[in-house]
Length: 170
Image (cartoon, rainbow, N blue to C red):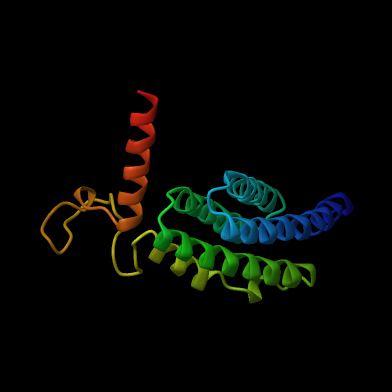
């Protein structure tokens, strides 16, 4: 590894530490005041930055996790308490795991940390499990309807919120 690339990774570690602290603070702020959109926007920016910077330094598994976690932000925006609780719990878990991954990566042992549990939690929040196809995939679900014709509670909440916002702007 070149000296320059090693310096990029060191910068990545330092910046990620700062981003994770900001994300922790933002999650706590959102938990205390769910009507404040500022913490949610900060969380999204942290995850977006983390996704890009992890990919830039070759931590593809971390980049993928950050990308998946970005999708959870819409769960926070939906305003449904059940969705919010599940999203917050999953994001707090993701922060802890990312922190462990970064510490392991500093020692060159990032492969010792698995994101499988958090990925599974994200899938559960999105209404998917390991044995089912995600909603919107081709095929039939147990009701006999095409998968794209069914929606999880999370997706229904997003749809209701989108419709509500659309009606406000008409």
